[in-house]
Every structure is written in structure tokens, then in C-alpha cells.
Image 1 (cartoon, rainbow, N blue to C red):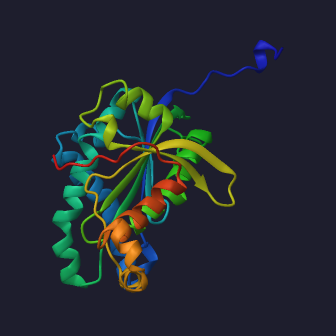
Image 2 (image 1 turned 180 degrees about the vertical axis):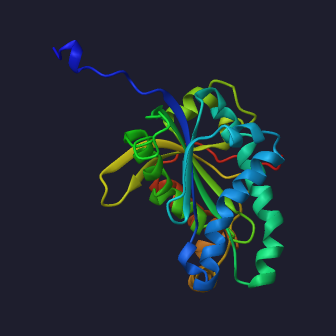
Length: 261
């Protein structure tokens, strides 16, 4: 038994939200500083837009590593990070799109989002706060190949936000009935980060889900046999295979339900 004098209090539980920019370095170098600067501005706009500016004002241990941003919230605020915030973030990025394209027609900002909960050091010490497994796992979820695949399989001009939430967040906030988003709008994955030894159950939510057919998809379609086309229907394999690949690689179960709200 560890002597009482050597024990330490468990850090307080915090909800964590982390974001990063999809294909950040795929933009021209001269735009990267401005895109990086925009991240907290966009997050603030989204919280104001959905009526939860207080969450942004009261955020804990914010940090902005490169093209990412992370902060903590009180656990009771977790449901609001899912809804209405994620939908508001999609709307905010959509509204900012014309201004970005006016600077460069190829300039875009799409965000991956991860939401987690767990013990997190929070003592007002920027050198030590937030450091620990909960934060590490939050960034692992953000970097999971399943979330990256779903963003790669969707239309980059329309689907601007893709989110992944931990099993604990899904269980407490979504299954608990505390969010305005139904559980059937999430898909279960086994989130993995190649080379990092990370593998955790998680759930993906996409506020505005799209499917796209690339030139390579069209080429593949042209060489499919008539039997293939008859089995799937014209365009069916493209619709299913691109996003289904992202889903099945993550061990999805059930049907994906999506509806505009």
C-alpha cells in the first residue's frame, strides 16, 4: 500500500476540446500565419453564434500548438460542445468561406474536432496544466486515421467540420440524453493512430455530411463491369465505397443517419 504521505489528489475532471486544420500545409505558405491566427477567432464566433459565449470566456488552460487549438471546460458543459457548438462551427466556417476564397480561390479552412473528458491538471500553471493522459488521448482521437478518412471522403467545399468524441463523452452526454443530437447521428469507430499504439472506441459526428466522386473514382467507374454497375447502380459504388471505407476501417456498426437541422 502506498503511504498516505505519498498519495496525491486526483486532478479535477475536465471536458477537453481540440481542433486542427485539415491539410493545413496544403495551403500556400503565405496564407499559413493568417489561417493559424483565425482558429481561435472562428471558435469564438461559433460559440457566440450558438449562444454559448460564456463557455469560451470561461475556458480553461487554452493552448495553440501550431495549426491546432485545445482548451478545457467544466464537465457539465460537455453536451454544449457537441450541440449546438459543432453545427455552429460548420455554419461559421461556411460563412467565412467567401472571404478566404477572395484572398485565394483555393484557400479553405476545414476543421477536425475531438472531444474528451477525464482528469486534467488545472491549477493556473501554464507549464503543467492540461498535461497528462486525457489531453494525450484527445489529440490521438484528433489524429485518428478514421477521422482523417471521413474528411478525405467528403466534399471539401461543403463538409467543413468532422468531429470525434470519446466513448465516455458519448455515453455520458449523448446516451444520457443531454445533447440536442440523437445517438443515431453518430457512428462507432475503433480510433487508431498508426505507429502510436493507440486504439480506443469512439464516435464520429459530421454536422453536414457529403459524398464526392473524384476523377479517379470516375475512372474506376468506367472500368467496372456491367454486372458491377447492375449490382450497385450507377454511381452507387462511389457513394458507398469512399465513405464506407472510412467507416468499415473503423469498425462501424448500424446505419448512418444524417439530416439537416
